[in-house]
Image (cartoon, rainbow, N blue to C red):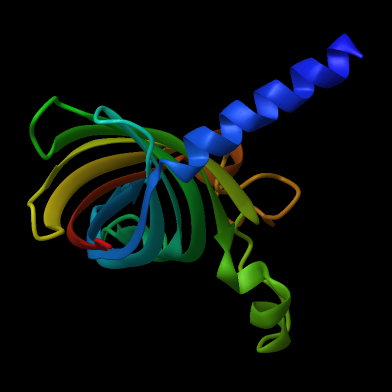
Length: 198
């Protein structure tokens, strides 16, 4: 009986807290400056776009789940003998927003999952096989942002991949360097966002 009472009280507190949370949603997009480690590639300039929910639990903290698209990879150097790496990801992340009191400035940190679009059922249906990129990447995202009272803001992030882009299960290793060394995604993101306030 005590356990049931405890669960009901905890659920009531959680429900009350959630009902007082300021909820909104928005869009974000901008420029990716991406590369792969240990790949002899130059930095690649591309873009990203996502939609997000924003759950403000207090003056100092908000949770921001996101889903979107990110174009990543690297550009081949003329003397490298390696092709350009073009990776199209569907990105899902949960970004913790830590606000500086009485300001729109915030620190961002959170985990994410990137899914290679070309190796999904939709991508493979339009080609004979996948693109040899590891299907999923686990990422950590850190950054800073500034939001104005009208909901518009800008942010800078760094996204670090934690899984080898060319794992043995997915890649035929035409490059010895890809076989002998580990390649991780690394992406600087610079962009704008707009949050719809209710």
